[in-house]
Amino acid sequence: MNEVQKQQQALAIAAVRCAARVCRSVQQRLVTAQTLEKKDRSPVTVADYASQAVVCAHLSQGFPGDPIIAEENADQLRQNEQAALRDAVADAVSTGLGRRVGHEQAMDWIDRGGAGGDVTSPSRFWTLDPIDGTKGFLRRQQYAVALALVENGQVVLGVLGCPNLTIAGEAGGMWVGARGQGTHVLRLWDEDEHQGQKVCVSPVTDPAQARFCESVESAHSSHGDADKIAHKLGITTPPVRMDSQAKYATVARGEASIYLRLPTQADYREKIWDHAAGEIVVTEAGGRVTDISGQPLRFTHGRILQVNRGIIATNGSVHDAVVGAVQHVLA
Image (cartoon, rainbow, N blue to C red):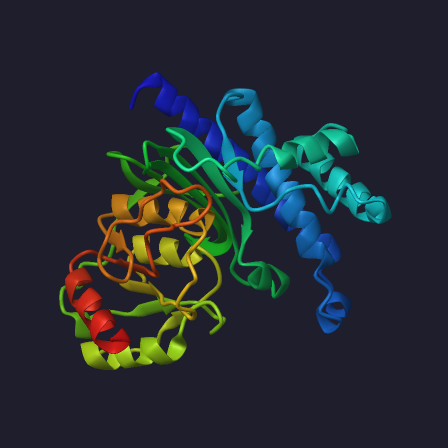
């Protein structure tokens, strides 16, 4: 790894750590029994904006010329009636960065994530999901901060901050995948840990012995089709269900061998920030990630995976069998 790559990785780790701290702080202060009862999404809205702002602040300082393709923009925050939301976001950003940040600065950082609207093939860009798994965040279950660097259409660095996934018995893990360097897991809240331990996918070679990891929400992936695919493969073990790209981390460390995101609409295409970091985390741990037809994911069409449909992530050994089962069921 050369010096620029080291700098990129160190900056990405610091940015995701900072964003995860912001998310945890907002969750602890604002997610209450009352907000859950009322299905009030305002806490995750504050955390989403603030997380994007602090990550873009880090990237703007370290790599000011790099485009960032992220999920949010500050259009809503700039509306006159959103003064309370602007205050809450600016406060969360200030807490995360340890210094006072004004509304305009926070919103400008959020809007740094607006690249990619008309850009179909930038040679180098970052892509960010500031909170992947918003319902998991509100339920105090699994969610992730997902940041990836793409060069010439290939993900070269991915960082998944998963505040509620446990490592060594403690909640809070960070999975870092770097092209040609493997995937390492770090303690998310330990500011002094930068290297971590290498992780590998499961050694399962018989698809019948594999375990699924799939979305909690059936709207995100067809659970009915997944059940048919499991039956086709002879899998009887119940699936692990969780929100967010934490599923990629679960496959990368061998606790599941298959993650499916099956299309629920014929014309739906996945967003790049939902899969870029997870793709390299699994791949560098020894696994394989493709679309449902077995084609590589192509990050060359702006904000969406235009030429891909659905996602299959596996430990690699069972991948071809899973692709075959998926094609059989969806046909």
